[in-house]
Length: 110
Image (cartoon, rainbow, N blue to C red; front, side, top):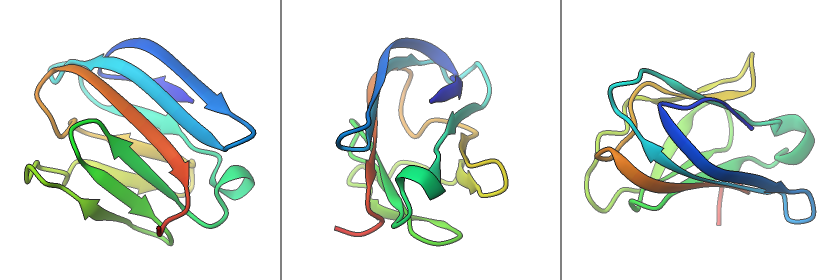
């Protein structure tokens, strides 16, 4: 569930059947941090992947977030997993401001 988003959310949903979250939004890089609550223990015990429409895929499968794909070599240093609060914290989106799709899907590995 999105808690704070730097930008404007168009839509978001979570499918309990597939354990997939999707959010369409317009990023605004000047609006600060974003936070997304991810109930890891309940819905993603084997980890999860964060997939963005800009080609960036990050995976959580332990105590850190690792880069799986980043074809445009965008800066992903602003993404971190806050284990204590079950949140992905994004200091700055790895893309220019504008329309984006973000998905969170089960599994830290393919």
